[in-house]
Length: 257
Length: 257
Image (cartoon, rainbow over all chains, first blue to last red; front, side, top):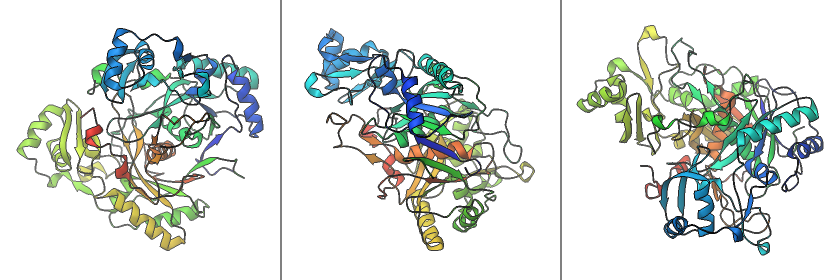
């Protein structure tokens, strides 16, 4: 029996490599069964961004990318493949910082992140060419679709978080964050709540889905994609819906643009 | 039985309110017993910063703080209590950003954070006066002491993480981060590891202790201190020791100073 208040993070067993047009929900139902799990109310499934992007066909062959003049200039500064830089710029609305090995942009979805979230690992045998994987077109919508489809297949629609690994200013190392959310509150707003002595709380908004993504990242691992889907059981969050866009700090409150 | 690769986060039951000079390790052993837990190899205990600071007597009565001229100037900008600003400046080596309601500093320990981590909730009945709680003097050393003392008391020295909640640039909401670490790797360095196809990994350093702190934060909750200590079971990390200072990005790699 679970201890009171216990949170469990259970990686789904033997999740297959995902290809374009795969039905992630069906793959997930099979993996839940393999892991011996039946979903219950308040369960949340965290999906690594990579499997969502792959299923949505967001893999690009760099051989088909022609870098613009601007991409060539930026590529010289950052010392990256100009075709990759071209993709990064296409996915972005603004370059935030740009120096050797570092290209931090504001992604069209609002995320401030390195390389527009474009990744090149686990995509294909290198003898087949060079590939890159973009973020899903609209991760909150991807999460909503996964939630609805899982609800249809199992009768129990879980909360969904789509996670990615972001670097941070000031701190070394990446941590899992939420880029998509459905049936789940991206943030918890504690404004109006009081401490043990009735004093209003200093910390008023918690990046709840980011904390859930970070927790799932621990069991997903990084080196392989063997565990890209993690069941989170035991969350007591009121399951209000709030998309991951709620995690974006409004520009007027952002002192580090 | 735990599922393979499962991670469990178990809050210790009925942890008492902590006072100056309390022996946190002894309180923890009692709380582990209450929760029905016996520590095993690779267990990690996450302590909320607040209980460590309280045990170490880091609570300050604002009535005893005389603001400096500089604190008075900064207090006018940020519109905070000048005595609180005085404490923040004493704990800091540099003001990073300063505007109405916002005072982000570089703490003497290296953390870039709001208000030097000084908190005012859950400290005392407001009729007794106004109090503030500083970070532990040296959180990595606090973690090491807790680990050694728990090792002596139980025969099994757990990994220790001391956690706090930090805001972030660009993203709304706070997340748990590690400010102290012992018997536990603050970061995981994957440099040299390869993806499924033999390609070197893009993400090479993971903020491991930060992810563990974020995960623990989910079950700690924010509004009360009823669950300030969380047992994390199932980590497969090689238990090399690396202090939380490893999570500080070197200034020469920091583009957001």
